[in-house]
Length: 127
Image (cartoon, rainbow, N blue to C red; front, side, top):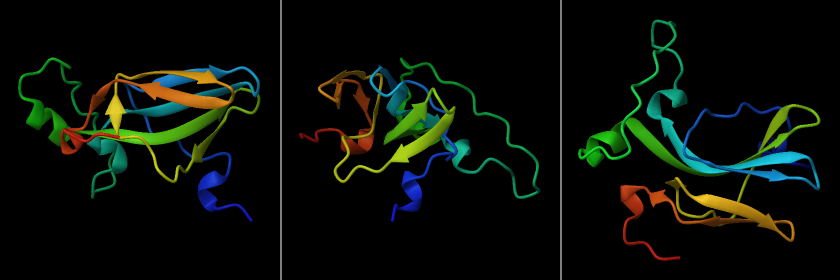
């Protein structure tokens, strides 16, 4: 039986700076990583009113630590079926370091991710 995280129809978290690759063989859009506003993890206030989006920072902002407190780097993989218009999360046993601004491509049915800016928590990490 499939785990709940492998079902189609899951809710995709908004993000930017992600890798987006078209996989023609399956008619899928594959998304890796990126960065999201921390408010996307909780979309309503305790009073039940919708939260307002956090301001979008400048990527060249000198106050990187403040930037990181408002935004979270991601290292998840999602597939969007262009045939059914549904999302599916793909759990990875050993995902790459969370990052934004990377580039990616598909070759021989594998997604490759290169470069990008990593989370300050992972600075100095080598894989």
